[in-house]
Length: 273
Figure 1 (cartoon, rainbow, N blue to C red):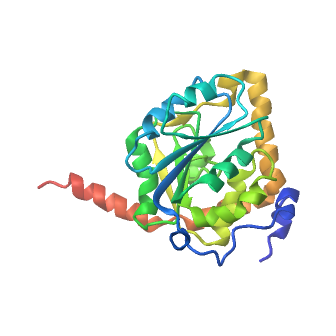
Figure 2 (cartoon, one colour; figure 1 turned 180 degrees about the horizontal axis):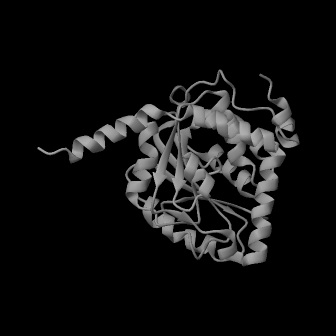
């Protein structure tokens, strides 16, 4: 079936998705381990919540923070973490561009992408997000936070979640295209790569983790406008029909076996001796 009609103008303009014949990163000299990428714009009041968890975390080989033209004290705060690889640019270019810079700079064979405005994250949450990919149960993992939209929690997938783990080879071929995408089109674009590559997908529930909403940062009206812009950017990459088709495709790719294995493991732990 041809779904070209479900793709927005931005997607049709930037068709250089990661090549299906791309070679795994191990064959191209990447370091073993995980590069963690966090994109930040004016997050000085919140970013410590995530930095204090990921800096020095044993599952992460490097932490890259892309300061996307912040005008507050974000950069000064980041410089108090000397082990961070800090990438800064001005003016603000949007999350998708910032993500592309982090992906291009990453030195490890796996990528972990995290939002800068998370609250309630623990080291165990980081382990849980990485585990399905690192154990070979899935090619990609995506978080499902406690304050994801109700409909996402009901279907068991937040397709625009900013927290994901994937092999770098899946995304590095899309860096140039991502730099020309709408400011908030990155997650939807990456999803199309995961679908094209038929990646097994694991959804990792984060029952105590939330992301701070736009209205809590900038007020109700400006927050509502920012949320509307995010939706509009997604629909510049895919039409409404395309977004429905994408969700259905991703749901088919969820690695159900990894969840069954997890349930069996939990039952075994709680079984009476």
